[in-house]
Length: 120
Image 1: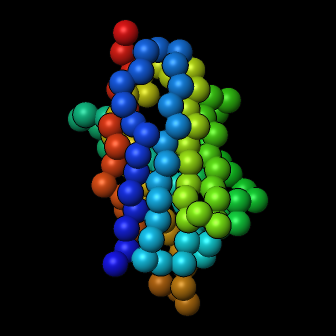
Image 2 (image 1 turned 45 degrees about the vertical axis):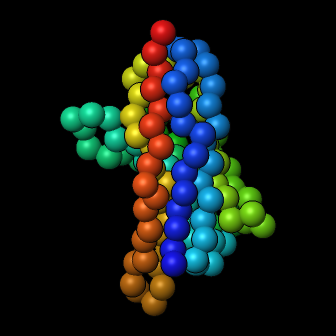
């Protein structure tokens, strides 16, 4: 059974930090590129950060560059999102996403999400 389980969300004051984790199971984690998406109330889900299957390549939304860092530990089947200098506009549900292309077919998995609220 495939699972992506996010943790680490919560309530934090502006300027604070959180570290999100996403623990994967039920598939070969190291074969998949991993991403974090966020969805604020009334808005579409959008990409926050992505990392390649072996961790050699990352990319970020412009709004989080210099503040967020995505990383992964393939030995522990876990991807992380270090979030620093948080702003109220970062408030959203954060989702973990796994994707790979296998013989032309795209295989994807989503986690259930973790709430991040930035408020004083």
